[in-house]
Image 1 (cartoon, rainbow, N blue to C red):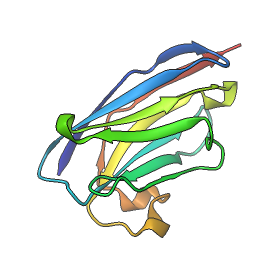
Image 2 (cartoon, helix red, strand yellow):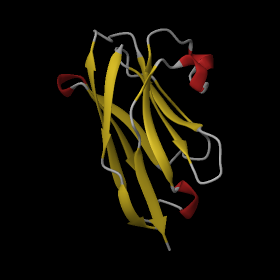
Image 3 (cartoon, one colour):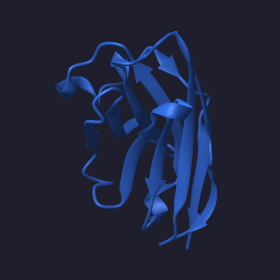
Length: 126
C-alpha cells in the first residue's frame, strides 16, 4: 500500500490561490493514478483531478477546469494541486488518493482508490 501525506491547505480569499502537496511513499507506484478528491460541508466526496504517475496524463472535473492544475514531481514522489481563482464553493477537505489499476474512465470513482491521505482543509472566504 502507498502512504500519502497531504499539506498546503489553509485559508484563502475568493480569487486567491493555494497549492496542495501530497507526498507518497511505500511500494513502487510507477503506473499508479494519483488523484485529489474533496468533500465540502454536507456534501459527498467528489473527484477533483487525477494524474497517471508514469505518463503524466491528467483529468479534471469540469468544476475546476481552467482553475486547478494537477502535476507531479517524480524526483520528490510528490503530487501537487495548484488552485487558482478560488471560489467559496471550493471550501472542502481535500484528500489525496492513489490506485494501482484504474482505466481512465474510472478515475473519478473513489471506489477505485485503495490508499488515502488524512485530508487537508481548504477554506475560501469572501
